[in-house]
Image (tube, rainbow, N blue to C red):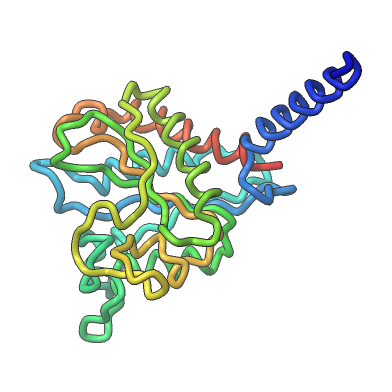
Length: 247
């Protein structure tokens, strides 16, 4: 093989590597605009012992949406103080009775939040929760399995988990499919798998949808209940969404 041919092959390989690395920093398909972003903090007040997950996650969400640059479209949807709903301050994201079911004419807190989110026509949707009974001081990312944009959602989840762990000291527990917790009875009608209601494409119109389980309500309690830590985590989430995905 001639020196010239070797040079061409090496140069081509290097170019492909560079292009791959660059494309890996963006959601596939990318955004050429500031995306519309919705943050959905947990409204669950019935998890953990003497621990209010809703208040913790709302503290993180408020920091994520506060003081955003002019023109940025980032919103919060939350059912916690809304009237006329069932399970507005509690309930599982993987249980039909707490999500899709109607009770005496009332929709659920989760259904209310998704209706409000869809009105905003978001590009990106991020749900914020705290895990429990894991015995791990960690952060997990979850995406909807079988989604047409699953690879892009996994990339977004990975970026967010990395950012949260960097500023909080939490262990990176990786990105998982939403059937992995294997609990309750809400299923995606397309895949038939157990799913998170908030991430289901049949419920949530945002193309990119991620759920973060930030810390454990027992092991990570001191970190999670600290207002300064909530603010730092929320700003880290916003930074990823605005600086890595707004192109």
